[in-house]
Image (cartoon, rainbow, N blue to C red; front, side):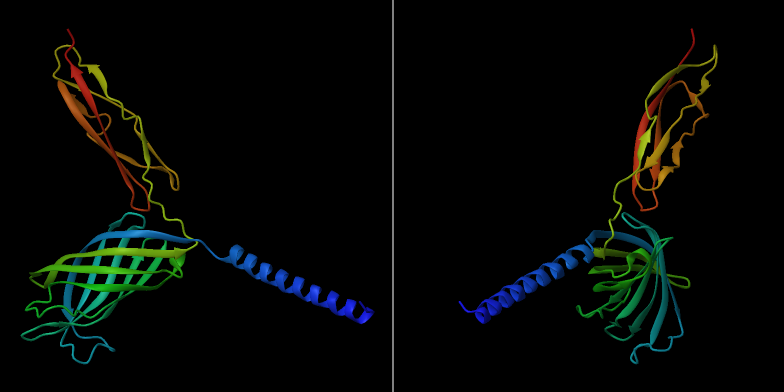
Length: 263
């Protein structure tokens, strides 16, 4: 092999090595910078009110009834959620319901933007009860880059100033780099106990110490009924304690207080 051939071979080997190295580097870079996609199954029932009014600018030309809708509720994996959107209707023998944009605000965390499709089902005589598809187009705060979709079911009945009912959202939410919190808090101190009432008394004041701790939020309030320090009558009384975190996860525990007469 001549010197020139040797140099050409060396250059070819070097080029191949550089190409492999570049491929590995790109692949490695994607692996390092590519965020894991967190996913949450949405099961949200929001209490909704609907108030008819003037159609805002940009409304569908055929819409002759526009209602400002607002809703709220607690959603597992998200927390306290509020919704706002305009409900566009073309009234007639068969009401038509047009596409709209819904804003879901999660308290203290961010927002989700949803595009809701036009209703394309059978002819309906009332736009108060129907289901349609939605697509999650984006988000803000910790939900930046959100995607997903599903269906929303509107269920409402007339009221004196519009209508009211529920919006039920069911589908999947995906957010890059976000690990959804779906673990409820733990409750401690929920052990049953027996106490003696004062002599001749039919009730006794009973105290207990129930605490709650969450993996993400830390210490959270534990609400019990009857409350610690209440007067319990003779016999057995069930105490129910509940703790909730900021992601809408709830834990409930029950224990028994037994009050016996003092002999």
